[in-house]
Image (tube, rainbow, N blue to C red; front, side, top):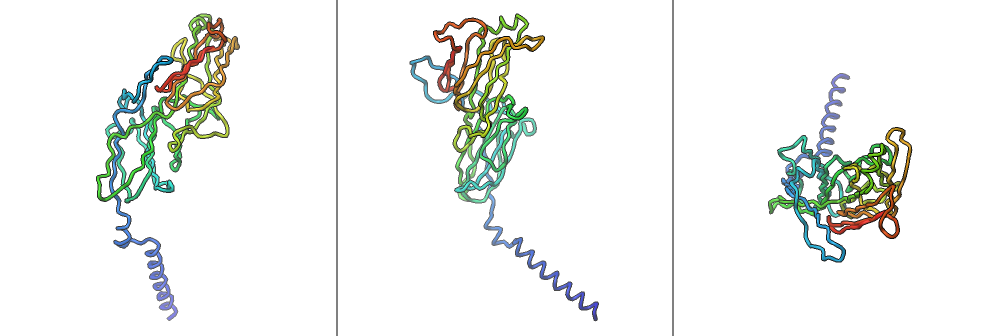
Length: 310
């Protein structure tokens, strides 16, 4: 009798647990129909927006953008993010790499319930950091506050409605360049290197994060530094995020001992989104401009140029 009672109690508990689980995880057709998923597709354009004209001072700037490069030759990583509007509730993130998905690179397929969404796409020559639920990307660091060298980074925010009544395909999503570029032309660089010396160019007061919502760099509690890449004895360059008050330091060292021989600082340099700033001058010799500073040319087209002479 006792044994039969225990069996009966266990049976009642099992039935109750199953009913409770069914309520917690409903699977009725009516509930499933409320979450019908519709396939969507984003085709990142084979070309991306960037401009390279550099108008002379006082000349009229040409309008529009030049499309000059195939997608796979400009970027190797794509990050696709989905947020539910109007509150930017995070839905998901998809990453693509040309090295892992060469055949489908640039074509993003997803399935979403009907609704209004914000879709953010980041694309970069090098791998970038982005927390899945964030609307920003971040430049990787070699060490704390020491930014890794990166290439061009592109971004786009699209407001998109998923509807059962339409074909949810967006063709030719054109991404816009989101970073800027700084070039330093050391006019006496060849002479310096021929004298068993080397040049190091660093940029300071740099931001690390970029927002796709505001389409500009995000405020940082602590600013970072990066070392520009040497392209030749006279040319150094780096891709950085927009900011003002950037400090550029040109240092000449003895190749053998590492002893610092000469240093030039160019302060209050500005770089904007899709903007190239070119700095030029001599480190050890005299400069020809009246104030003996480096020339700075700012090109925002990539859009217009700023020259700084030192």
